[in-house]
Image (cartoon, rainbow, N blue to C red; front, side, top):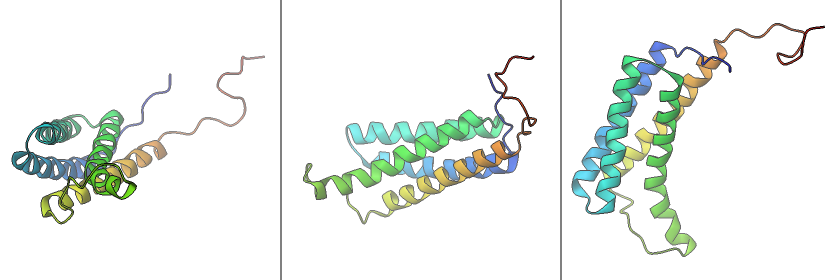
Length: 140
């Protein structure tokens, strides 16, 4: 099994900072929500805040993947309720002009982009395999 690449500390710190801001925005949104929307908002906030702390403590590629997935879920939580009514599925359930929702959407999208970029940088720092035979080819 291949080893995971080391994560650049600077990139991990930037991702953690944007993830904390996203978590704070989701927490603020969840405090105003009711029912399943509040539970979902608190879950996104908890994942973001705990994940950012873990990323700062021990930067690992798995945490960057988690940041990317959580960010995509946050972006979808904003975009899907606005898009689905145009497709004839349900009625409008979100206020498109709510500043906290727009802010969370933007910070989630930024977190996704920065985490993907940091993962790519970590992958680029791996040493390349020697030229010649494939790793699975048996010796002669």
